[in-house]
Image 1 (tube, rainbow, N blue to C red):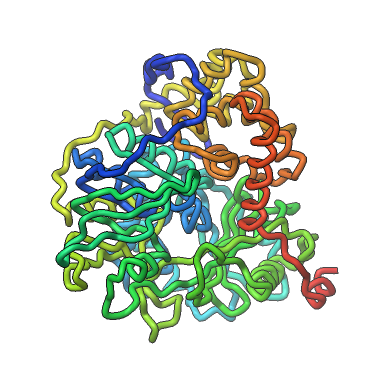
Image 2 (tube, rainbow, N blue to C red):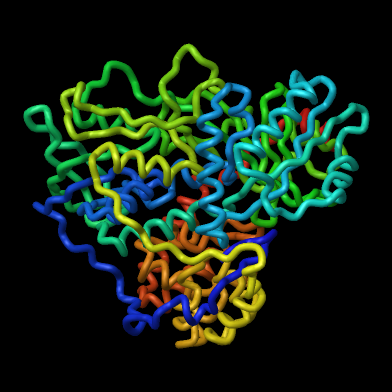
Length: 571
């Protein structure tokens, strides 16, 4: 497969890519077998993109692997990113050429292997005359960036994008606009789901909603973990040869609970906040990379039929699970957007929601957050009295797979070749997404819009979901009136993607609840339709709905108050 612009292409027809489902659909709730007393070669703690990538790598290499996540896979830092797969143009300013090169190599791999989820995107870099970045330095940086990447990406770009941007910019200032290419993963939650399925297919055992209470250390060497199933409340002890602490901003907390003392904190948490606003009139299709009111770099990115603006950098040593954007951060992001585009007809009251996550950057108390390296490193706890335990510090969406390879190599897991889907390119293009969507539509008896949505979100599983949908009209029904994504996708999430709750489905496996039109009515509709197929009683459906709404509201926050000065400025 390949994606050109937003076109998905296959070298082979879908029917040749997928086998028949192994059995009839089973909607019974998953009963998780006990893990008490079992032994694994590798126990990975943390189910964000790094942890899932590590589990996948270790399982593919033949190591018996257990993956544990206290909430749900991709529910933490992964789902709170700017959703860009990039080399990190700004990292060149800090002379981190090695990190940029590594990131660009990984960007190319992701574009080839997951083209339905990772696609090229046109960027416009807009700087006014007050910027400290000179045009000559920017051109030199872009030249180096493209050369490190091996050339330009095939991405739709036009002068119209630049013309749209120029019409929106503050005409009272002189602007320099530069064009370049990068990539976007609108839904990293879906990428994590695919890697999770690849990990379990290779033999990994995956458990979400499972908290690790402590790492068991005996005679200065890790022996296993004590865990608690958050759904049943049952506690179990599992043995392991290696422990990988991939909990991101929770890394130090896990060590503290386990009485593993490090010389100094490993993580210096930095909160990054975003706001999401409606797509405004005249908005370019390109993403914009520019400077905020304080000259920090920020992104204004088309995302999920909305506009994503971010991010901030605020030191945060609190509980990462309770991270939320401050009103000051929300005001800062909106002021930066309005300063850039003073003609847009938006006020702070139009902000749909804001969200925040804590980046697990290396502990660097003497450096400004923007100067702290984004490169990952592996902390070996042998010197801390916990041999065979490694903590993963740092990292980003783009380099998760490379981090996983390095981690597997560090613990001596032998590499084995992994089968990957053949990728089309250039003249080998034979089938556009329209044709694939038509075939999925015919296979499932569903509309082409729904079929396209399944293809773009589920890739290799699209045909299996379509075949499931053919079994009943209830499975072909949309999850709510505002989306073409269907109930069969949700059922597949429970059956094949380790989803355990309504929130796991609607926020991460089939993330329709991130959409612009989602409302409490949509939540009720989706819960009722999914519950009917899953055989939930009214009480269970109500409980799932209540828990989901609480989770969504805690994640996607509507600003509680609006700055009066901003309101006045926007009138």
